[in-house]
Structure formats: structure tokens, C-alpha cells
Image 1 (cartoon, rainbow, N blue to C red):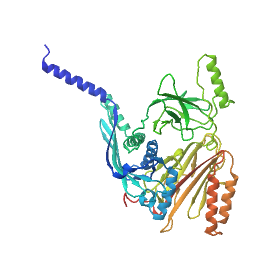
Image 2: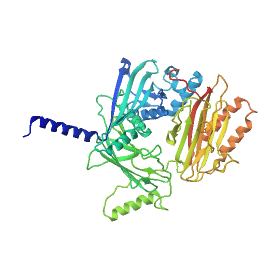
Image 3: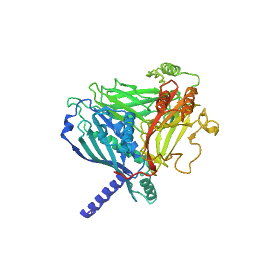
Image 4: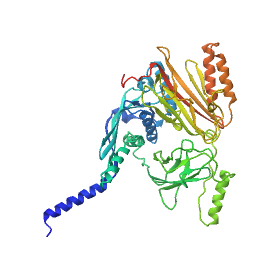
Length: 542
């Protein structure tokens, strides 16, 4: 006879078993916020512009400031505010920091009053990034404080302290599973998971950030992105197919990288809300990690953007899988094959060649810097030009790493407001590895030799009382650029003999010549501030 006590025990056992199965490998996010909105927020007009300022990183985790800033830029862009390009913001911030002799991420909002940069400024301070570990549990926590200023009134119109937790609970179901569980909770704390937490933070913050779309405007949304790639490594001639599920009757585009964007998607007539698009990989296309981003826009201006990270492919710029055939011939062959089998297949027209970015852009490129004695920070190629390093001092260091899918000519110059211009690459007459052209598939490190102090080039201390604006120009070209080397040599010949009134326009002309758009050339610029003193970063708030 089954007693009531036995039934209770069996019920408890069943509940615990179910709980173990559900929590065996459970990972989840939680997000909370503390918001303060002012009356001024209700009066924000249509077309209000917003600049996302350099993020203050008060945490002990290096590199989080730029990671969060870029994610905020991506996540807040679909909202109904006018964006201000990060490169434009960086330029204004660096100039202001030199005038005020402060670090770029410490320039106050009062330096931009009057709305010349933007109608409003969004400041963020990463107060804490922490990791917590127990035998069967781990979590990553990030807490960020936000202040949103109106540049005309100088008042805070919105503030928030937002916190996200990325938790993982692992319960073993066997004796051997104990070691697997311990490994999983430790693996959960890796740097890539911290990056994923940062991306999720940006998305969730965008959902709670004030939006002023008309109540008559219907929201649009992307629910799911599907990616179909013929292989894990895509080469010229391969076709990448993208599907997106979302609000029906909208306009959709997708992008694969910063260079391949605004590709159209068509809504299926047989299934409302299903959008399809495809892209044929061209020679010169590169993408280190498969990331697909889909944009949706309505007729009344409502937008949504959704990204699929680690989509299971990467793109290598190399020899096509069908040698000797152009993109048009590949498309034609695909259409004939489909016709021969009786299977109807939509063939997208080839995308027109963009002269700004071409086949000789780096297959991989990195800028690695170390400032204030903190951990080295790596900035990838696609973020160069929009990333803003913290102020650097004597003893801080940096280096570059490049690799090209085909032979290329590389030029790297460093210049500053002290009217110094130095060529970092090529270094003619020295190490053959530091000369042009750079062979395909060969990794290039600048400087070539490892530094005994820091990560590469070490900055020398500048005179007391000075704050210097530093710039680095990176030019990648299919052909040698003798005009640039001639300009460089001409400038060096005038240094020490010409007055600053002559050198200033000469240096400006050199920068303009390098940055001028030209078919077969790719240019990136990095700017940062160097202050007097040694390599030590003042504490937060100082």
C-alpha cells in the first residue's frame, strides 16, 4: 500500500530530478536598472542628435571602454535619434582634451555646449566588471553609470545605473560529470564570454533607453536570422544566403562586414515576414569572424537591427574556386544549372565593385597598445579610425600586426602637433621583413623586433607642461605610392630649416594626400593624446 508519505517523497524526488535536468547546463542573463528621467526629456524634438562620448573605464578590466562604446553605437543607432560618427566625435574630443590638458575620456560636457558637436552627449562610466566562481556556479557582472546631457541647456536629461549578470549553473548527473561541471563554470569566465556579455548589455540597454517614436508608429522587429554557407571558409565564387524572420511588409538589408553592406533582401510572397538575400563572395572580401547584421526599416521610419554573431563561417580573400571566371560568369552558370535541373533559383546580380575597399585590404590587422601600465588592448582593423585610445604617456607602447591575402604595399606614418613626422613602415635598407611589397600570407609585425619594455614602439616623455596630439596613418595600396614617399622625403628635408608657419601647412598637405580616396587604396587613421609624465594612469575621478 502506497502511503501519503511515500507519495510526498516520490514527488520531491521527481521535482529534484527535473530541476537537475533543467540546470545541468543553464546559462542566462539578468538585467536591472535604476533610471532617472527629467521633464526636459519630454521636450526632445524630432531629429535630435546624440553623440556617444568616449567611455570611462573605472573597472580593472582593460579594453572594456571601446568594446562597450562600439556596442552602444550599434545598439542605439536604430532608435529615432540622429547619429554622430565616432571618428568626428574622436576628433573633437582630442582637440578639447589638448586645450583642457585632460584625458580624452575625462573631457566634461561643458566643453561642447552650444550644440556644435551634437544636440546631446551620452556619457558612460564602467563602474565595475567582475567574475565570481563557485564549484558549480559562475557569473560575469557589469555595472555602468550613464548621464545624458543636453548641450544647449547643459542639464542632465536622463541618467541610469544599469547592471547585467551573465550566470551559469552546472549540476553533474554522474560522478564523472563533476569534473565536466567544474570545467564548464570556469570556461564560462573566458574573455569571449565577457565580450558576449558586453554585446548583450548594449542590446538590453537600447530597449530601455528613451525613445520618442510617435504612438501612431507601429514598431518593427527582427525575430530570427538564418545563415546558409556552403562551407566554413568562404572564397570568391561561394554564395552566402541569408534569411530573416520579422515584421511583414518592411524593407530589409543585410551586411556581412564593414565593407559589404546595404545588400537587399526580398520578402517571400509565399510566407509573409520571411526575407531572403544572397551575396556572392568577391575577390578581396575578408571577414575574420562570421558576423551577419540585418537592418529593417518601415515606411514611417521605425527601424530594427539584429546581429548573428559567430555565424559559422569566415571569408578569405584568395583564388576563386572557379579560376578564370568573373562574378557575372559565376552567376550565369548558376542560373543555367538551375534551369537545366528544372529548379527555379533566384540569382542575385553581382554587387558593384567599391573602389574605396578592394582586394588588398588586410586579411587581418591589429593595433595593440599598452597605456598606464594596464593590460595590452587589441583593436581590430574594422575598428581602426573609430577607436580612441586613452591618453598615453612616456613609457607607454604600441605595435601593429598585419597579414595580406595578396601582395600589397604598406605605409605607416606617425605624426604629432610638435610637427614630427616619422615613417614606421617601410624601413628601407634594414630588415627585409620591413620592406615593400609585403608578400601574400606573410605576417608583418611593426616593429619587427620585440621590445624589452611594453608591447612595441615606446613613447618618449614630452616636455613638461605640454599635451600633444598624435596621429598614425596606415595606407594599404595595390601599387607603390612613390608620390607619398616623395612628399615624406621633402618634408624631412625642411625639418630644422623651415619655420612652423611653413611646416604646419606642409604636414596638413601630407596628411591630406595620404587620406585622399583613391581606387586601390585603403586608409586608416588613429589619433590619441600624449601627456607629460611617465606611464602611470591617474585613478578614476582624479
